[in-house]
Length: 167
Image (cartoon, rainbow, N blue to C red; front, side, top):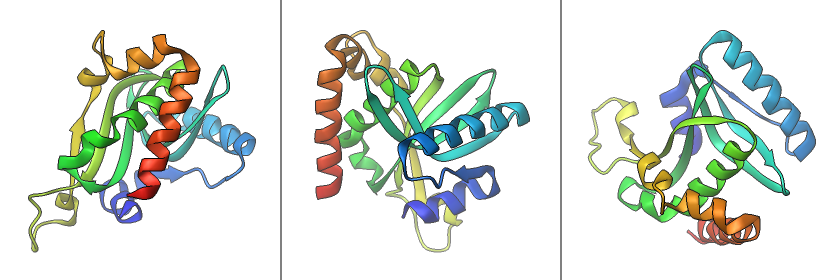
């Protein structure tokens, strides 16, 4: 699902961080972010993110939208109607991204469209849901992660990852 989405939606605009080990992946991500910002457009798949104290995440997609801002896109193999089940995963990745100095304009989940029909363009297979407002309200999940500290964020991320593996 994810590979098809990357091909159908992002085409040649996406460069994926292939490194699996953390330090080389972080270095590759930083280099790609600089290149993309210089070009003024582009997207990075599997971007490695690190923030103190010891928070690590992999963003499915970071897309540069100009003016020093990025969009965080989590890709899920579910119906868009179930996207809200993955808010903790999205919030944790957003927390690590923002703590590492990345300005996020929007935080999105892309999943299977419930309205796609055969014969439509392949791009219509996917739907996007914007959770930026929901995550960034004063009582939103991102704020709770910020104030709850890294321990709660790591615990929630572990729960989200376990749920993703079980799905």
